[in-house]
Length: 419
Image (cartoon, rainbow, N blue to C red; front, side, top):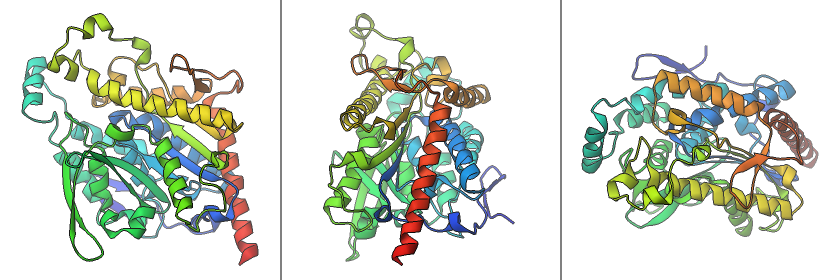
């Protein structure tokens, strides 16, 4: 019988059963391999359904190669996620009672479909009522999010994740980014927070959900307070953050990594998943925005221009930087960014959780798999078909799964020889 976690709605969420066999073993560290594998997941609220769909497809292909027990966390040395991506990261990497991932990738969207309408309940008080509520507090009270995340993750802490995680937040009191990772948690007790606190914090988008405060203790028992908001304030696309984190570990002499230079980015293999954007709509222009005051920048025609601009700018700059970096290293086949710039209307929202929109996001994710693989245009910042690949995202993921499987098998073979 598979273990379950009872949710407040009264339903039961089925988690992964005990797994036996080679794939059930803990992932072999990068020190036995030839590349460092990284999965990065953007922030985007309910649009987390889009990467959820892509990850389900990838895991299915891995299972065809290595058996039904294969899980995403078995193949990536680092899983980085911001905001909703941080929640997906925890779902993929947090252990169940048998030491295997809490969620199979195919179950991620089930979580969103069940819980999003309660995390982001519909409001019926009209635009003026919404503006009034925004002036007096966040759009949502966050109580259901806190409850369901705490029940799901329980007392699990950052240092217990199956593979290394990197989850950014921002400390509103210190005005600095705070990143939680398994490596940091293993070396600094004050960073070994509850995964539930980290997920709540990285999802605390300004104006949408309340900031989150919690305390940990250092090795001497002294308290450390965190006053955190959404990680998207610092890194809505955490790809470079993940790369930097690995480089830091190499500089520190972490034996998990094979002897490479901290800046040898040609040894990385990265899958970066966006949650979609509405660039194609070109919704605003300078003539309109030149007349906006505080309220219009915070909320305008169902969108949040200020927040959208900041988060999209950060995500795009990371993609541009990573694209240039891997092209310069002649390693662009090891960097795959999957993003959809063509979302429209409700699908581009982070919090519209009607059954119709959630279903639409599932379909958007499926359609994205069928689209031609893209790369960022360094001049316009838009994703355009990659003529050097001439393949679909689906085909690229099949190839990516094969490379991941081969790398994992090679590591276990080398580990067996050494031992």
